[in-house]
Amino acid sequence: MTAKLIDGKAIAKRLRTDVAERVRMLVEGGGPQPGLAVVLVGDDPASQIYVATKIKQTHSVGMASYEYRLPAAIGESELLHLLDRLNHDDTVHGILVQLPLPPHIDVAAVLEKIDPCKDVDGFNPLNVGRLAVGGQGLVPCTPLGCMMLLKTVHADLAGMDAVMVGGSNIVGRPMARLLLAEEATVTVAHLRTRDVQGLCRSADIIVVAAGSPGLIRGSWVKPGATVIDVGINRLPSYEGKAALLVGDVAFNEVVQVAGAITPVPGGVGPMTIAFLLSNTFQASKISFQQKT
Ligand code: NAD
Image (cartoon, rainbow, N blue to C red; front, side, top):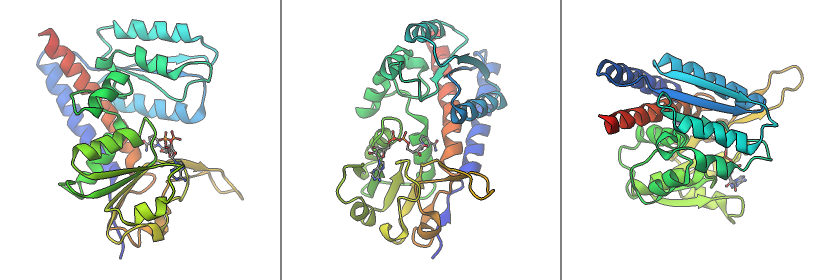
């Protein structure tokens, strides 16, 4: 058996086209051009690439992009001051602070500073709480992307057994909450979980965001299960071969067992940026509706 490949690249492209159309209609209807401010602190090479891609795609859907590149040594209060300014800037509808931040900056203080209505990453505690209680708020982009990919395979997740491997605030926990909201039976596995393999083996759905290359083996997967691989791991170049991007799933093994699987690259990654644009559109539309 060979699993169906879930084509995140194509699905993300359709979502971006849809966002571009909604932006056009908003502007034609007298609304503002949605604007996204991206704040990058320091010169982490992976973050530089992510930010450049985000800015390019923001323009491609007709939104404005405002870029703030700050030195790694910037003080926390200076960063908070910038966020305060962006919170009060009417041309900015979404604010994204690229993580990770340098160790001298308190990430929690930064995320709390972002106006929840402009918090397009969905990391502000108010939005985290809204998601936890099933309220209306901005939801983190990667879990939203995983959910859209899952829905291409299972229209109804109610009653399905889902295992979320990884319990981070940016992926694992919000993903578990979205799965629960769809009435799946959700287990969150993490580094201290005793039998991750056993849990995975009985699951209809496995979502993995662990940052551990090839963690999920073919023998861990129930035949026909759906596997969503969030992991992005850069294996160093060796013997003249270029650096390789791999997920948290041993793809060549799991593809023989699963019913459906996302590739890396071309699976969850493109969905994350597409939902960043979708969240920015949503934030600008709500701000426009509140003013009219
Ligand atoms: P994190 O380090 O914050 O959290 C990792 C989680 O996985 C923790 O809960 C940890 O306990 C768990 N874990 C680690 N190893 C494990 C193991 N062997 N068994 C069980 N649980 C284990 O990581 P994160 O920020 O959530 O990112 C996870 C991965 O997802 C990384 O590879 C990251 O690059 C990737 N990522 C991809 C996207 C995307 O857009 N595709 C977005 C965010 C993160």
